[in-house]
Image (cartoon, rainbow, N blue to C red; front, side, top):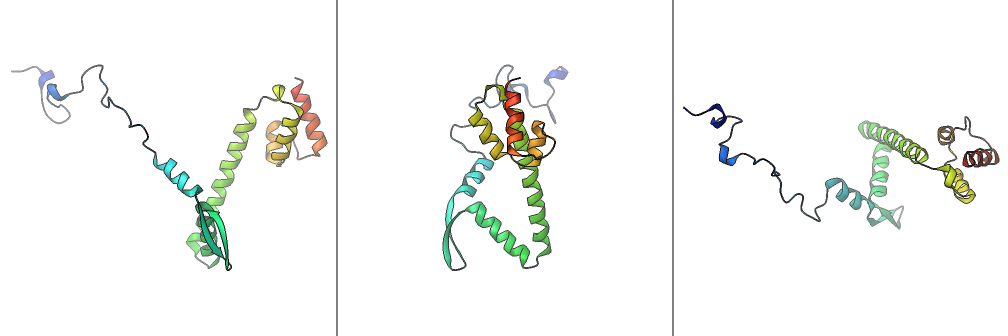
Length: 154
């Protein structure tokens, strides 16, 4: 009979149709220009549309229009939508905090100019961010500037 290597059955295709050693199962790879679903959705949510709110036309992104509709539905008393809005707000806050912390962790204070430091302080004046940089409490801007300029000299 034939050897066990030549056996054909479930999980054992014929030898001639098996993947060849050293060859990829997808030799051409992903086609150039093909877009991922998250990228397409993200682009779509960023597009502007004209919406009528209180009798006035406004240009909003699709994401903004969806958020307004969700909140309106929640305000109408739909309990399920209320929970969705609360969950979305929580997730958005967590993502924002994580992103801000990531940015602060990757900043190189030693190589920044005072103008750059001032801008960072103005943009990140929340207590959590100041704490992440090492300031224990949200404090006066002058104290924060002194702290960051001190970090710059380290």
